[in-house]
Image (cartoon, helix red, strand yellow):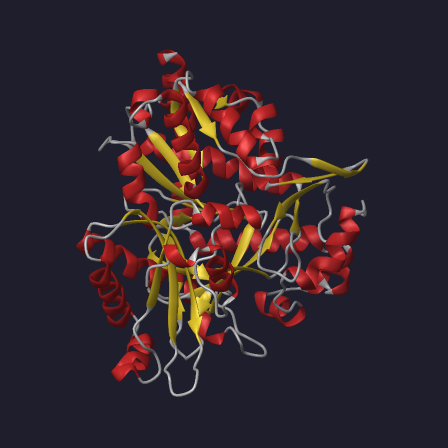
Length: 509
């Protein structure tokens, strides 16, 4: 096994040269992909409707193709689900990633072409290993197996030629043999649809395996880890898997989970590597030991545009290309892909932390924020405030959500938070004050509205009992997979839903 590990390390690092090329020539690489995508799709139904054959510049493209979302592309995708081809992309599309994104539908079905599967999602998976092995020359990842907690929907068949499932399930069904050999547990367990049954069986199936790496969404991995400790009677994961060295995480900000993972994996040398992989594409990978920022991957068959967040509501918003972006500004991400998503707004907001090379942070969602009073609080603000409050009070937050308290009579508005703690703060009222003070420091709009409690009063915070968010997500049919606890909302849907299941005696304000 050590010999195989050494061979894998040598082989996989050959990709580093190509990564260095797009880091050095980002604009040229993106221009090549733009031209390739337009040329490839000119004879599709979409390409003909938007006259791709005569597109000579990005300006032409923007003039002919408005910014899209799932609802605008849905009529085309529904025909593809029924088996029609050459609609948005020229090659056969028979795979669709089922996602629970923020649209008018309960679920989205994102087309996954053979090119997107191989040149984007699979390539991203290989590059995760490439960058890790490059950063850790003594890595021994391949001496054991990688545990993957996959999605909540296994692959299903719509018709003779069309299949759908969570992105993780689609990828697992198409893994090359070498990757399948290094993965655990078996597919019949990994793709179970019942999340609680899957957790139980995964715990028993993997407790005696030499697991060296783990990947998945932090929220659900913690549920699995606690089940494994319950089954084995061990105190932490290193007593179960002594050779564990790497955790690939994504989908949500890892900051609120970092302290929980330190308790579960008490190893200062444990490597945490963040990825930005969505049903629509694989966008970023952490390429150095700098938590919270990722290298924007530019040669995955995706052309990027960036819409300044302040222009989001413009009638004809003007997008920027890579060479026009600035550090520190929030942008909505717009993509055109080798699966036929054209100028598609995926709903995430990002900011650039570096322009040479291009590195990004995810700052939130275009629909997940609180702006009921002009305060413009985004997820990044909320998590920085929680991090500071936790640091000063010794708390660890497991999950949270927040929404507005509307004006009533002469009372000012406010924000209402529901927080489930892994470790409660030493002084709860101080925790709330620190959170509020930090928000005021980092968000001038919030600070202005908090002046003398005129528009916003001090936040109202409820401490939720252990298991509250798990129960709520279960009741909503949102356990496992890519489902995320919604952090912020500009309405009271999530807050009221959670308050409804909290016993009055368990609420602490």
